[in-house]
Length: 289
Image (tube, rainbow, N blue to C red):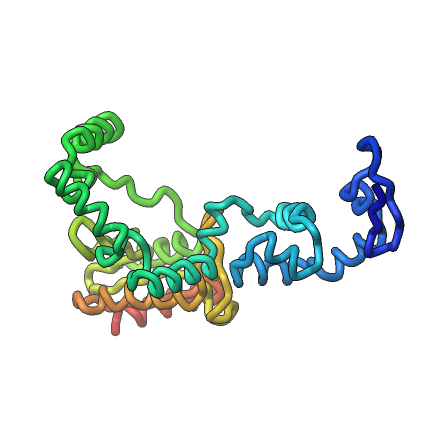
C-alpha cells in the first residue's frame, strides 16, 4: 500500500509494518518545519487553553490526520491533556454553561433548577424519603468515622485550623517593621463570611482596625503586569482570568470595609522598590490615618 506524504511528496510503501506514517513524519523535514511554524506555543495555548478546542479540532485546523502530533506538542509545553483538565478550561466551562442554559435553563446539572437534579431528588424522595444523599444513615456514619479518624472531631466546622505555614519575604518584612514600631500586628485575621466560612487577611493592626493585604504579582494578577483576559494557572488543572481574580479580591476587601475595617493593599513590586526607611514611613502614615 502506497501512502503519499503531502508535505514532501514522498511515496511510502506501508508493508509488513516496516514503515509507518508516523515514522516518516518524524524524520520528514518539511513536516517538522510546518509543525514549528504552525503549532507554536502561542497558537496551541490559544486554541487548547483559551478557546477550549479539542485535540481533534486543532488537528483539523492545521490539516493533520491524527492528534498524535498535537498531543506530543502539548505534552512538551507541559499543558495537561486529560479529560478532566480539558473540562476545567475556562472556554470549556463557558461552553458547558451556555449549552446547559440553552437546553435546560440552568448553568450546570447541580443547579436546583436543572431537570437532572430535580429528577434525582424526586427519585430519592420517592424511594428513600430524603432529598439529599447526605441524609442517608450510612453516608452520615461514613462522614462521622472519617472525621473522627483524621481530625478527632464530629463536624468539619469543629476542626482546628493550623493556619498558614509560610509567608512571603515581603509579608515577613512588613510584620518585622510593624513590630519594631510597636504596632503589635497579627499575622492573619479571619472574618466571618457565611455560615461555617470566613475570609482570611494577611496583616491586622488592632489599634487602628487596619488590614494590610500583601498581594503577590502572580496569584493576584498585578494589573501593571496582566491584561484582564489573561489566564493565571492555579495548581495543575485550574485557570482563572485576571479580571475574575481582581473581582474576587475587590469583593474580599469590600467585605472587610463593611465590617468597619480599613483595608490597604501593598503590591510585591512596590514593596521591593521601597527601602526599610521608606516602608516604615508608609506604614506609619497608614496607622495614623
